[in-house]
Amino acid sequence: MGGYFSQQCLSETTDFEFPVEITKVTQNNVRMIIYEFLQQIFQLFSKNLPVGTWNTSQIEKFQNGIYHQIEELEICLSEEQSRARNSFQTWILKSTTFSVKKYFQIITNFLKDKQYSHCSWEAVRMELRTCLIIFDRLMKKHMS
Picture (cartoon, rainbow, N blue to C red):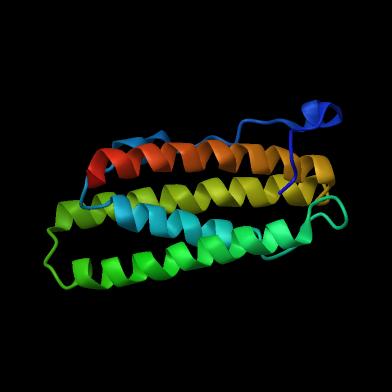
């Protein structure tokens, strides 16, 4: 969407405190965690985007891709939810989901504090790119 990370934005980088417990999810929970993560990304990229600096058609393509993945996961999750879950797995899932929401609240607060500037969005874009790589690895690990 925004191309390479701009040198002028180096001062905007921050540690968003990625919830490392996500990397330890089980095969039973990975789809739900990724679903929550994609929902949060979709919501984030549906408001206060930098105007005029990113290619609008690329943003729309990204949003459509995320939305399509959410729809696909909803089908998988409806099938999984029909199966019984034990209370320990449910607790782990709720805890991890809470961590994802907290992580995105930190990102949202960062953007607000920086008044949704181009550089703050660039920092978020780079952070989420790293997250998507982590999720790609998780999917390959648990779905193969």
